Amino acid sequence: MSLDEVFLSLQHAIDRLVRRLRRGATPPRTERRFLVIQVDGLSRAVLEHALAARRMPFLRRLLERHRYQLQPMVVGLPTSTPAFQLAAMYGVRPDIPGFHYYHRGWRMDIHFPRRGHAALVEAEQAAGRCGILSGGSAYGCVFTGGAENNFFSLAMLTQPTGRGVACALSAFVVLVWAVAKSVGQTLVELARAMLRLAAHPMASSRGWRWLTIKIGMSVWVRNLFTLAVSRDLYAGSPAVYVNYLDYDVAAHAFGPRSGPALRALRHVDGAIRQLWRVARRVPGHRYDIYIIADHGQASCTPYRDLTEGQRLERWIFDTLLDASRAGTPQARPQSGLAGGMRARRREVTGLFQHFLNYLEEDFLRRSDPEAHQQDGVRVIAAGPNAFLYVLDVTAPLDADALEHRFPGLAEALARSRGVGFVLARSANGPLCFWRGKRYHLRESDPGPFAGRADAALVVRAIADLMMMPSAGDLVIYGIDAPTGHVSFIPERGAHAGPSPEEMHTFIVHPAEVSLPSPIRHPIQLYDHFIRYQQLSEERHDVPGGVQAAESIGATAYDGPKP
Ligand SMILES: [Zn+2]
Image (cartoon, rainbow, N blue to C red; front, top):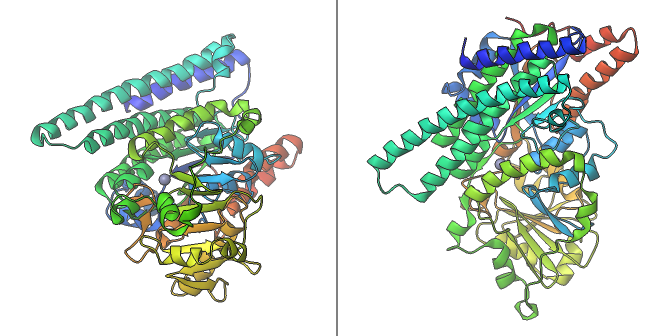
């Protein structure tokens, strides 16, 4: 028995005591529950490489010996966590064109690392929807999915009843162990860094920054998540969604197939093993475990490396837009409108997500916003994608209206260095400017994407993207630039675009569970996972509910099998 397990069983014993204090029963055996383990940023191609190279030995064992299956999944555009999670958690078509964009209605930027922005978007777009995590837990996610517990809930610590204290104590046991373990692993990482420094005294500041990130993300956050989820599994939480960010962060910094990124996968594999073992120890809770990825990453070159430090969001103004009309830059349109709309109860997640995202933003990216505004035009660089907005209109302009204001802009952009293609709207669907040529995209005539086996899916995803009111009047991609993929922010791995590595991911699931097939958009996951909520309600309302509960899988699934 590992020390993790000792602490978890101690915590489990306290939880049983809590139940006795309440004189309540253990959760009913018939209740089916799910655990989603998201490996942020892992494409199917890199997963297959990692499995073959035995970088994820436990996941490989699940597939080979424990009747788990790998199903391909296509995630739609943008290939970005917030868009994926909103669709999967609430079953809505998101209006989230990227990780950083402009909201025309609120006249402000939405940038997910900023505090409260995720809660604003969730409150607006998921209003009235039942989330797949109602009554459950979410860790490291952009949105709550309706989860009650978004980390160690504060309410639990502010109600000093006998039960409350025991609950807090239970959480505390896990917390203390997570801290002790993380301190230990931090010391190991520091000792290793010291040895490396002794060997290479010229170690760059990048090495030290990466060490901080690695300790923050890979040691503290991962340990805390794994133990908190273990605790939820013992307690029988109805729905748990945990997002491990280790791989995504490493892949952004060093590339999707780099050594640090593949090493991060091994750590995540260890976390999957631990959670699977915990689920096996409580077969009565009947957890179905899913391992999924929200998007992949494309290996890329930073735009500034191609352009002697030039930034796209400046260069457009300096070179392409009418220089004679250039005035002084206007203030960023951050208004106080947002203030009243904040969903207070989601503050805890907001805070925590804020911390996670800032770890990434502060260490890997410049902290100044990648946006520039001049003469009523705002350009935002969000990753391998950038948006151009004309600010004096409330609805997106189509290509003709834009051509009228800025003749030749889209073609010139599409021909410029570091740009793969530029998207615009028309009355008959999306337009794509590719190497200076204009294509009308149709599923039957996918223009520059014709060479791809999944061309129809790409066209559909682009059509979805350009239907989003918040997508720029022009959407500029560095993906498929003539010199290879390019990101407009400083990173070696990027996502948001339609390259196969970004769009094609996977879902690993127990063979007994049948999923919609093929999965071409994360919205299909909602239909699957919301069944757990609906069935649990039916069971409590209707005497025949127990039979209905068996209909998630093709056949009844009786808990994890040995
Ligand atoms: Zn990412």
